[in-house]
Length: 88
Image (cartoon, rainbow, N blue to C red; front, side):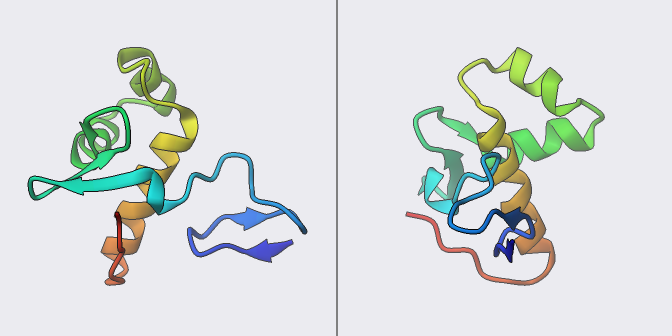
């Protein structure tokens, strides 16, 4: 297994199935969105910070997938670590 930049581990020869790369996020209007969902990363992070579980977020926003939520968490973790994260 190899370390992945998101902090997750990936299987040899393939990605961790729960990983969705940062290019699944998009920058627009000074916000970062989940591509195709028009839901901001800040909203997802805020919901989880306020105590919602990942499953609660997925039920409330059915257009999101588990990898979308994990991409938001990975983005937030990289920002907190002080690393620049490029999105399309």
